[in-house]
Length: 413
Image 1: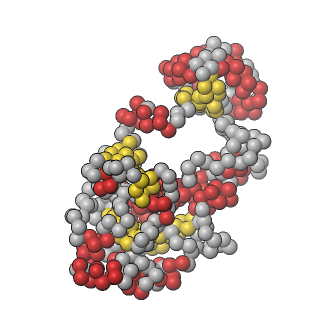
Image 2 (image 1 turned 180 degrees about the horizontal axis):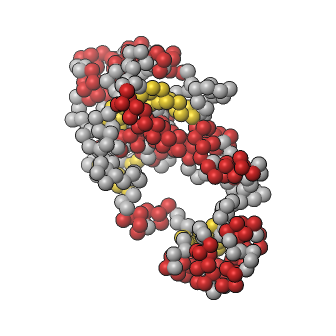
Image 3 (image 1 turned 30 degrees about the horizontal axis):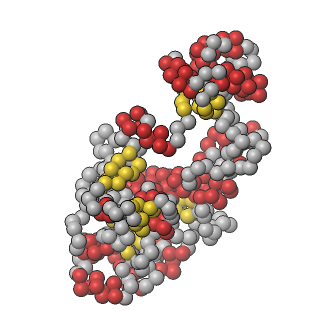
């Protein structure tokens, strides 16, 4: 065994062990959330190659000499608080080791294609009898049922199929995907919620269960009020660019020195905006006195507001409107985000030591979960491939070095 096991004694999920057979983004998002909350996550990776996302760069983490490592920023973003174990699931011995380790775990999370794990004897129906209290979460593109069940799912496809692209972008232009893999990330978040609910059920009844999470389901759910607008009205939602379908004015405007966001959420805020902007006649205009009227008459109001806002700087509007409790903000670039005083105060950038950096630290984005009595913890930097194989096999299966050497020789670990 190399080193000592990380501390799993902190956090609301401490004491739970997760067998993580996920890769890329949706599944790893889920298991990182569980790890941040204290669960001990064992990340299973293919010997020699590992999680596909390790190679999804540049950029890559650089070592102390400034050279690229084998760890992409993509991989680093969703793999902290995990221990990496290399295991060849295509071999009978690898499959048997997996089953034995699963027997020591509370949760399995996997994102193989629907039905793919059956060939390894690791599908839920194949192990549920041996481990009746196990919570087993499958994350796929389209779920375990339905005509698309056997298809591979990718965030970009699901953004297209799930409708979010149809309402994203400027009117008349091509549909636009969201700038990050939101379908993957939201599915991972939903999966983490479902797992915790299933664990609560297990604690009350002793029963485990299978959780069937699908990117497309999650994306459809995430349509939220836009999807409900259609269900209620029967009218097809259209792309509005940076405008809101149900609130007005709630959009991007160009000030004299750049773009900014004005987010007027109610009629009182609109009145205060007009007072600050020295255009009280707009607040009194019958076409604009209520949000519903402003939404219906947005084509007339938008150019008027655009001319008013263009006459002053971003700082003028942000400082002045925030002072009268009207939401307004600049549009920050990513560097500006991490320099923002509120982001800094909330400590949304953290530093963790990393073995590639000779004891120095690396920057990561913090968890947004703030629990007053059982906070998240940052115990383990994103692991190197197979970094904890020996440690975990000794800890869970009491395997000695001689046996591990034989398994390495055969390519099982």
